[in-house]
Length: 504
Image (cartoon, rainbow, N blue to C red):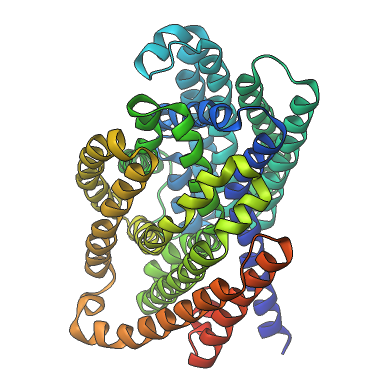
């Protein structure tokens, strides 16, 4: 009994830590925006300037990332059990490369902010560009470190680092609200940079412990013949890093293109509204990211040793992600409008009006983003790169057409209309990687009843929320609890809850 109980406990800790880590990653920006809306004047303009800086930093950081966090996760997850020396060397090499590239990418923003600002629509705010350079360096290193520690199955340390980031960041923002400096947006960005360095320090010791464990096991373990070492490992890193860079670039550009274009084609105020609404949705999607984190560490090893187990993990994670996305969509439609105004104040009425329109995007992106994770785990990152690249062109065209006329709603429509074909196309490629049976009529017939059951549960949950919600805390909280209860009971009655458990 102790072994199965121990296994269940490990899965519970792993999923729980992954949930917390994913929530903190997404919710930190939401909490900061909440403080800005509550404590600062003209919050949509302030948050628009901050959001533009974050978007520019995200795009300019792509060369610095070089896909190294995903490369490290792939190699460490694959070899940590039977080839610890290979996993340890992969950690060292990828860390060194990440440090060098992060410094090189942040230097132009720190040294020549006017020149960089002229290229990204921020020539009028060079101080924000400089602050963005510090943020790029901090977050590039911190994000890499948290992914690296998760590759050793230490999700608790990943969650601890992100908690440090959130606490330090929010504390500094509150201090800024107390002092009220002239350059509020610059101070907010610098607060995030300082928080990133603090979180990097918090995760450094756990990484050293995991490396010591690998070093000790490497001394007594005979690696398998297929484990790369020396020049072979460097070649493996290079082979993975380039396509991973393209995957990351495609995904990030696909997700952040609208935030780069909105202040140029519309206004920073429009970006402030859209950024808060999308941050709310991103924070709500944390549970799907948690399942992806777990699958990312399970699929590479299972594909290598037990392809049938990999296919079971794949299907369970798809069902879990879609089920949770339907719950989020139900809440976005029925509860979010009242809750957003209660939390953020009357300045956020435009945000509240926009959130329900994210519902179709929530379901599509939950499916599509896990397909990307699955393809990377199957050593097919180039495939996802091609898909996001093709649909990035569609996304760009739609943004250019829709944003000038509809502002934030145009950006949302462009994102949704681009994500739906990405979800379908990427799943087709996943079926090629994991088994053509996943794309058969039998697979559709098997999946359709479950999809219908989950859809009915989501509709009933939405109805319950709409019936109970209102402009008071009691009504909004009651409606949120009702949405969750109806959704959970529906999945339990139909048996679909087992998919969520299997994905853990």
